[in-house]
Image (cartoon, rainbow, N blue to C red):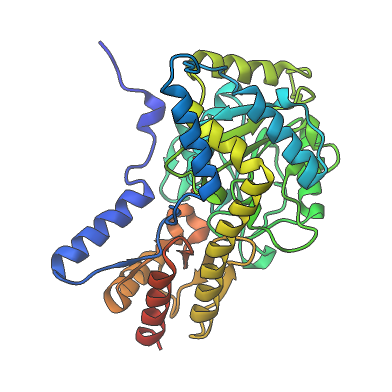
Length: 409
Ligand code: PLP
């Protein structure tokens, strides 16, 4: 008799965004004719940059001709894209990595979810609270945790690293032992960034505990504050204890096109995994379970890393960052505490009058017709906050901010 996975069965139902969507739908049914202004999701809204899109069209033309058609490519990604990624890290971050360290993928989410599979089930994950939900859920589904503990509002077997206003939303390394440490900077959902010194403490911890850091840099192009690292490899010693996951979603608008990468250096080592082992296992995993990213998307990735493409990406990022400024300043004026939104598209806002995150979500929906994301959906430490997203057309963002200001004075 087939049985469902006991690890998947541990997952709590109601992934955050479906619940947000359900409440919006229910509100719309109760308020026919009214529309909801959405500042709730991390989905890009603006058109693909022109040069990058044209390069993808050119790739389609090549695929339409049998003389230039290509089918499956290398599972690790096309060599010109891996080379372009290595050059990009060298040029922009001063980080020297061989192109063989880069594994191209269909986006950061699947890599962030799958990476736990190359570690022992006995590995203890350490995850910031609040966090992008994929890190917790993939560790639960991958069998790295115990059951959900409702009283503790978390899973046993996970070391939760609290990130709150007292530490500027950047956790300290845990006091106890952990094996796989998830970090995401600029952070989703808090918008916080980590300094070199803060990241260096995690690198020291990883060396001490023979742990591995999984560094999610999906929003690195949003960093404008001088001196903030864009890549974990800007920290000395990170190459032998860190994996980095990147994405073209939030800078090139590839949320629908789908393209990302994961860096697993040859030098990476762990408790019983000498240098080269984890690199080899990730290569094995990708070659077995993945058939390579779309060749059209990869042509777009190469274009996005060219000089013209980089200009276009930074313009697109600038558009969303201007939205973030409008939200931060507008919402700040009505006296709500706002964090993030400078080096990030997310504004982490405290709820007024001791409301819970879901209460404030419902209140904003009812009063201002604006949807945000309840902070508690990212972990128990997110309670009392909502995440406001800068992804939206400018006119919609301006309308939403004006409505919040008018209705919450
Ligand atoms: N990592 C973080 C922190 C994110 O917030 C997101 C998307 O919202 C992703 C990864 C997913 O990126 P991708 O579209 O490349 O799968």
